[in-house]
Image (cartoon, rainbow, N blue to C red; front, side, top):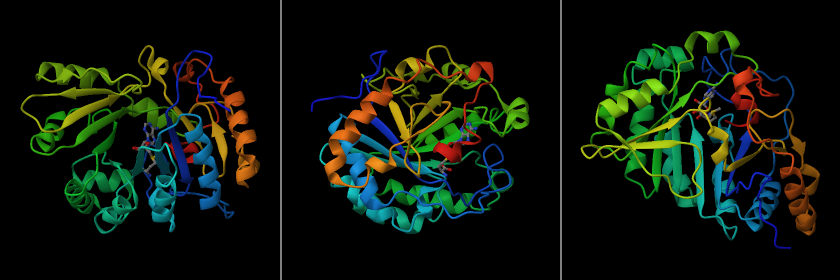
Length: 327
Ligand code: SAM
């Protein structure tokens, strides 16, 4: 079989975002303001199932895997998951998005296991505000963890901040200071509406254009994109080691460069973060003899991918919050 993941719009999918748990220990106001709620024990994908899944994606041309959640570091077998993915031929990047919990103590173990890229969420540089936004007074320890990560052989470290009106949208200069001498990418993500956060969204959503305007007025310039890169824009400045990144899901043509697919922590294949449904492929992850069937099912399902999300119409699909599918 020589199939590749290419959809009806001609988009290629080198990138899979794999949620390994939907559990989270933080209660970010825009995501899980009341904390993680679940009264039944969930059966997350096992290492063997993850191995079969990634082997199929790699055979179809995927080379970048991002582990996410929920909070991926809550999985006790995280290091083994990373090692397993690293052993699969064709996988060149293993990235992870984390809230930075115990980062300093654990990051070198993940890098030894094969982690190549790290994103840590830091919505504000003010410790008190961080506490009220996330429910945890841990900003200082996360920033120490980032400093430690900078000494390790990671290919890229990004800080993620959700752009929030009058919370961090007027403080770009503070972030710029952080980037002066540190090789970090400070990535702002425009707040997205989800099933659960409508009131919050109405109050705090602001277009990423405010950041783009700030960057252009301060001498930052948009970096040319590599072929096949996703929808994020990157801005660089000759006097700064670090860079800014901007993800603006409400901008025109955002979905044209979509290069990612998602699998949930219980084995549902999602064609879009804001789609109407996931397709269970777990029954095809049980044995290596199912590879051919799994690969053809993935290619077949990809035909259902829409050309764009419908967030502009307030249609958030089945996603109550980003922890559910994997943000
Ligand atoms: N727990 C990890 C973390 O905190 O980074 C990974 C999962 S979290 C859902 C992934 C990313 O999605 C985080 O950077 C988070 O800030 C972002 N996020 C969550 N809800 C969002 C929303 N409604 N709009 C934009 N970004 C959101």
